[in-house]
Length: 290
Image (tube, rainbow, N blue to C red):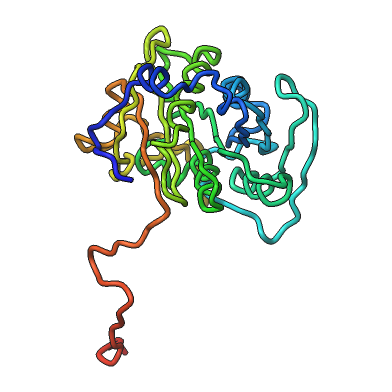
């Protein structure tokens, strides 16, 4: 399934036309949710409340924050798993490891049958462009997709002038998941939806979802020295999130223009357009300096 980068759908029209609000089919859905900020983060509670009207929601979340730590998994050390009653969820599973490990533990150890969807979020901060390589939220959704379970990663851009009202965002997040969980928006195995909400005045989120490619421009990476002595320095990351390149059609530009964006993310990293695959090159001509 391919998407025009400039194509968008109306959330309201999709809800009306495809019966995504309280139909009997959707009420039977099962979700596994996680995040990268820890089980006690407000975004996870907002996500739980967004999905609860659709059916069963199983929470498998990390014990602590793993933000910007990417797709780390632990195959060498033991992983502690706890069961705890936490408001507003009730009983949840707490994993002392990464978001990707939360998904692995949930899908391969805790659940007898796979859920309909794995949903990661709601992240306080956007995950745009090359953020997909760093994001623990995206990593959780990617891990689910790699294990053949459809998935979403949900994030909300932060702006000091427009603080998050988690109750309002929860309602909009539920509408987006309801819309994109319809069969016509199903992605191929191994793919997931990366969703980003803009920071907008009075939480007036767009009524359309814009399908866009992810950006590939780097961040304006910079550091400042906080402390130093003769042999060492203590550095703090000092780059501004918005100070980054962007194409005219990518998710970075659209999100910063206050659009609600959705990017279909896949597992294929091979740049086949540059060199043919399944071929070989001889090393006979290799020359090494003395």
